Image (cartoon, rainbow, N blue to C red):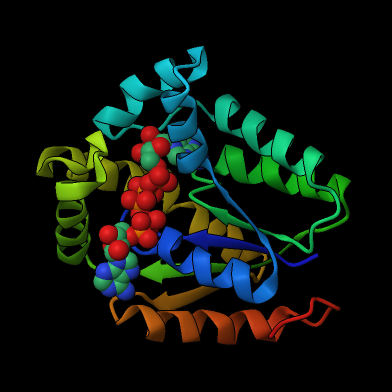
Amino acid sequence: MLNIVLFGPPGSGKGTQAQGIIKKYHLLHLSTGDMLRAEIAAQTKLGLEAKTLMDKGELVPDAVVIGMIENKLDNNKSVAGFVFDGFPRTVKQAEALDALLEKHKAPIKVVLSLKVGEEELTKRILHRGATSGRADDQNETIVKNRVVEYRTKTEPLANYYAAQGKLKDITGEKPVEEVYASLCHEIDKVNTGSTHTH
Ligand code: AP5
């Protein structure tokens, strides 16, 4: 299985790049942000609880997102692999993911870390906010809070994956196609299995 983590701050291009990667390598996109927004749209209890935190730019509890990912892994056993986008976001989530993938004997192959400066992140997110309808894209205070959550809770994960020899830094402040080419280059180095690409 080709399991990839797309890692990086809000607005670094994880969702954008996931689209090309899943097509090329025939993988399943697992974005906890998208799953949570689907829960909000369906007005579930989980969604309503998550919305209060998401609208402020704060992380939702680990148990919530770990449970969602566990369901997806259990229900998609025959896929070629997964692209994890926006998950894991804490060391606890990373440990839980390693344990879940261990069960499937399919560890993470590579963690691709998109590097983008704070000024560019803010610019991208506020620009998207004009049309996205996302409450957390609407003002600079919330965007800053998302970045603070990332720096304090998520960035320490880089060391977790570096210690496993899986972390690859990618310059994300370039045109989408150039970033995509750099990501594919790193994926091809670890994709030694039978996954067909075109
Ligand atoms: P989530 O949905 O994961 O949002 P995020 O990480 O804040 O990321 P974004 O979707 O904003 O950015 P991205 O890196 O995917 O970039 P994108 O491609 O969209 O999380 C939202 C919330 O849900 C969290 O705050 C939290 O509350 C909760 N949550 C989710 N997962 C959780 C977890 N695991 N644990 C706890 N809580 C969780 O691009 C952004 C913009 O930039 C787009 O407009 C795009 O067109 C543009 N762009 C992309 N690439 C480029 C480029 N190269 N050049 C110019 N523009 C570009």
